[in-house]
Image (cartoon, rainbow, N blue to C red):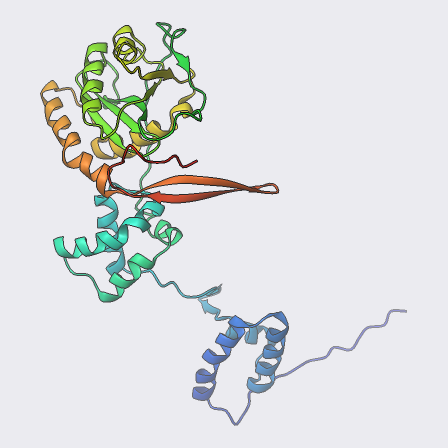
Length: 363
C-alpha cells in the first residue's frame, strides 16, 4: 500500500498596504544588506522579504541578488559595479600605453603617475575623475582594460649551432655569484627580413644588461663578423658602466676569432660565454628585449636598404635609447620565498635612471 502525501498549494499575497513605489524604494537597501550578509543572515532576510512583500522564495532571491530577465534568459549582476570603464578612461590609457612601447601592466602602474600629466600637457586635458582613477588602478585592472587591444605575435629566429670555436667558448648555465653589479650583458641578433631569409636584408643587434636592464640596439647591414664586431665596439663605448661579461648564442656572428680576440686580448679581459644549442631560454633577458625593443618598434617588415642603417643607429642611440633606458620603468625579481609547496616571488621596480657602477646585486 502506497501512501501519497496530499498536495499542498502555497499562495502568497502581496502586502496590500504597500504601494509599488514603496517596494521599489525599499529593494535597493535590502539588496545592499543582502550583498554584505553571510549565509545565515541571508536566509533570514529572504524570509523577511517573503513575509513583508509577499514574494515567492525564488522571486525574493532574484530580487535581492539583483538578477533581472532579458527576454527569456536570466542575467545575473554579480559583484560590485565596475569602476574603471568608459571611453573617457580608455582613450588616454591606450595612448599612454602605446607611447610607452606597450609595457606590461606592472610597469604601466609605475609610469602612469608621471605620464598622465605629460599626456594632458601634450595632447588634451582629461576628465578630473579619469585623472584620479588612472594612477590608482591596479595591474590586473589595467590588464583587463587592455586585453582587447593588446596584440601578440610570435618572433622568427635563425639561430643555428656552430662548430667554430664552440669548444673554446665556455657554456654559462646560470649567472655565477661573482657576477655582481652592472656590466654582464646578453647579446642576440634579430632578422628584419619580412619573412624571407635570403641574407640580403638588415639585422638588429640587441644587447641587455641583466642587472640594470640597460639596453642597447644597433642596426647591421649584414650579419658578418666584421659588421657585428664594429657595432659591439660602438655600443660598448656608449655604456655608462664597464663591460665585464658577454653572453651570446651559437651564431657565427658571435662565435668567431675576431670577437673572441677583442674581448679576451685586453688588459682586463671580458668573460666570453655562450648558451647551449637550441636552448633560447638560456638568454631569456635578451630574447624578451628582442620582442619589446625591436619587434614592437621596427615590426616584421623587410629592411634591405643599407642606407637606412645610419638613420636607425642614430635613432637607437638618441631618442629611442633615452626613452628605453631613462623614462620607462622595469621590474626585477628581488627574492623568492618558499612556504611549503608554494614559491612566492617578490618583485620590485627599478628606477629608470642610468645605472651606477656601485649598484648592488638583487637576487
